[in-house]
Image (cartoon, rainbow, N blue to C red):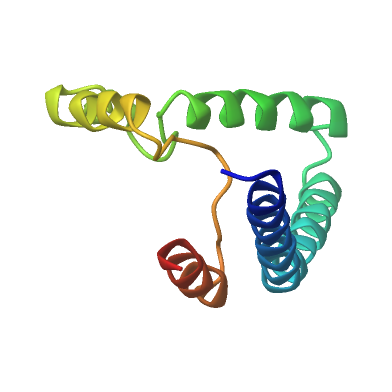
Length: 124
């Protein structure tokens, strides 16, 4: 290919990425800010209602819960009866995402608008 063609394709792709990033930011960032504000208020309320727990202890518990969730364990109710996230079907799916361009990440749209835009954006 000619240098001019490659440069044009590169610029179009970069422009497409910038447009996508701008739309995702507009759709998802307000929801993220709202969630962050809600959790700060909930933590403050919990600390004020439970004088036997300080903010450091609560943060340590939250870190342990986040680590469990990142490991695929949902620490609600009786966790001893939960099925494995690494059964053959789940492991097969994960192996498929590793060897393809799909990937498997921690960031994804949370709002309905963000999810719909993501589908359309990926199809274009």
